[in-house]
Amino acid sequence: MRTALLPLLLLASPAVAGSFTPPEGCTTHLTVQSRGCYVANYYTCEVDNPGDQWRADFDQEGMFYTSKIDRETQWVESYDLNPMVKQTLDANAADPANFSSLLATGRDDFEFSLSKDNGEHSNVKGYDQLTGQTVTIDGVTLQETEYEYVETDDAGTVLRQARGREYISAEFRNFFSGQSEWFDGTDWLPMDGSPVQFFFPGEKGFAATQPLFECDAVMSSLPPTPEVPSHDNL
Image (cartoon, rainbow, N blue to C red; front, side):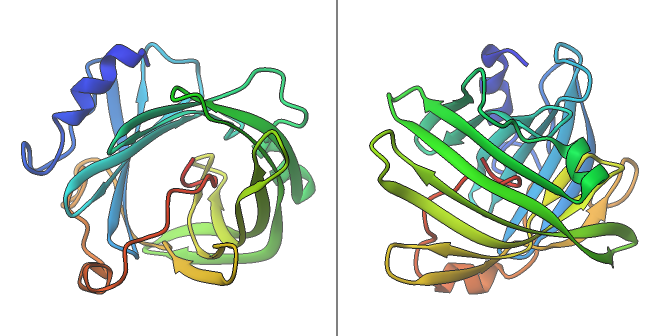
């Protein structure tokens, strides 16, 4: 999807329209309500390569993040919207993320670099591994993974570090958040963005932009930690 299409996404906030409308030439195929007071809409666009997917995340105040992955779930580009910052995957990754390898072998190691349009640059190294467990959430069967990664700047200073569990769907070729821990430099802080409900075209709740779960708890807690790159959130 061309960057020029991004402003069209901003019109899909709950304050403007009650449901998510993707840019022209794009089609929404899945909506996921998750713990932690956010809802995500997944869509594909005609101008993209086959297998590319976009995701738009909403909290109670509207859309705050959107990202694009390719068929192998590489984090191609993302946008933080408050303020607007674009992040892209650098070319020639040392060890690209590979969803097919994870499915075939049970483990995928990755090492790549990211660039932001504000001049920041970072390097990410980690792994995803199937645990052998499957779960069914709202009728959707998912495989559980464990993961760990560290993100550093070019001097080697640790910027972010995370570990935990996520879920994958071979059918959707995508990751969904689970129970994770994010290191703040002193302590490991628990977070849980696990999916609760899945909605498909024609179902009530599809294309929703208002999150449903744990919003009171989020509003009464301390401000969340900064966005961290994971399969579910670049």
